[in-house]
Image 1 (spheres, rainbow, N blue to C red):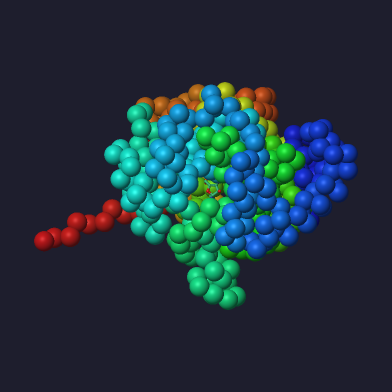
Image 2 (cartoon, rainbow, N blue to C red):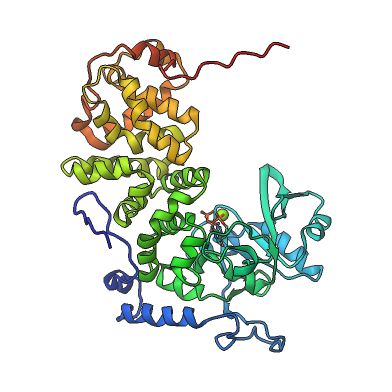
Length: 466
Ligand code: ATP
Ligand code: MG
């Protein structure tokens, strides 16, 4: 395992085998043993095994060969449950279907956090759901699901249970990457196809019961991120899950189960094969949730950053005297996010890349050109949209002017407040050390940057004559 453990501004790595932390959360004294025992339990919980299941009170044990969930009586806080989501579930149940709240909302409710949004899953097919809710529409071509629409733009995503594809059916034998996961299934199969145990809990709204087919409740209690099934396989099937594990650990302050953590390290190179727009979006999500500092540190520590943003990880490794600045900047992003909500995407990307960018542009006369060269690799690797890449270039090129209060014409452009926020973050995070951070000789490209005409701007395509 990579361990470049920091002392000062750096967060502690989050592995769930940290017995001190688990102890502090009221876990058994021998937390390591508890994690071991749980791991054993999860691996043994294959689809055939129903021994770990218990029955909902008052119901007959179904004798249909289906695995039974462990059922936990939990009256989740009604005030935190979206009434429209509960309405969708109840109407489906009244019509004789199975329906539950599922995924992130159940996880967040159990962790006593306010969920961002609510998802419903059901055995009703999309057309049946569509028929029951006039204010709904079927979306998706590969996997059809229903958006039930409510006032204020609220959407309750209602999905039919689906199952993971069989190995021979959907995938090549050597390549684990899932390309097609659009097969309808049953509740227990839907639980198992999900990524992490804490994300696969179903909540029965009327009975006040959590249904657990994958050992999610013990993980909620021990606050651990743990894949369903073998971590390495699950990460190779969909490498973006690596970033999701890091996101949940960082934003929910959870540990990562040791085997899951080691698989992240082992599978990290597979991220290079993931769809670039998904990577771009997931990195933004790591930065948007008020835990950018912890998330990026985990990326660094696991070696994930070497794959996604080697420019930044090399800077952190080579410039030990300066790397605290990066963590301090990320802490400032978190402080602002928690206070006022997520920052502009351009601000997030510019700050994330600013220190290595600054190093690359240091002393260069043509800062736009240097910034362009630096960003080329990042843009290719992550499909950074042109609008964002161009904005980062201009902001970095103009920083010296902004620092000395010479915004000029640029101060009348829409990018100006964005650039000023980057500067504010620098000043708030680094104090005096921010002064002159971008000091540089004025270069020939300054005017181009003000006008938003970087040298490498693609030529406009000629209109074709008819
Ligand atoms: P957040 O609060 O960040 O939205 P979430 O758990 O709701 O967290 P979503 O991306 O909204 O995350 O996904 C909803 C659910 O879909 C997850 O809880 C998980 O069960 C399942 N899921 C999402 N992405 C994957 C994936 N890559 N592989 C397997 N299951 C996934
Ligand atoms: Mg969600």
